[in-house]
Length: 65
Image (tube, rainbow, N blue to C red; front, top):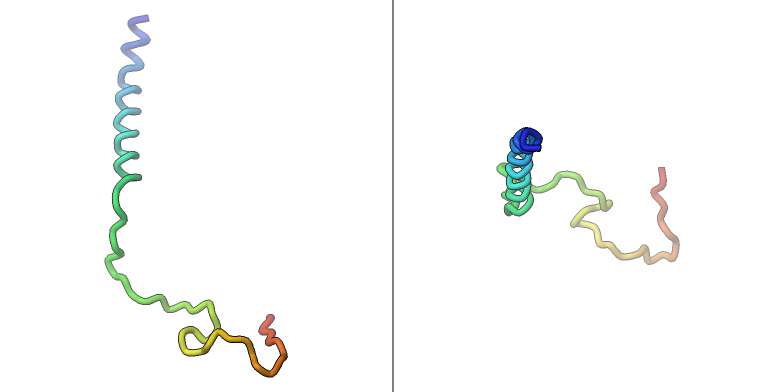
């Protein structure tokens, strides 16, 4: 029984160390990106320049592929 306990001691130490590192990784504050810039991809047609109101002529626009 003592032999089994001695063999399991390194595994317990590694588990404690790993959990400590995981806890530090999960609780750290996110850092800002090093090269932060505006996103180039616009998913809304027209982006900032076009208004997001409905067409006034009463017909719905469809841009399906």
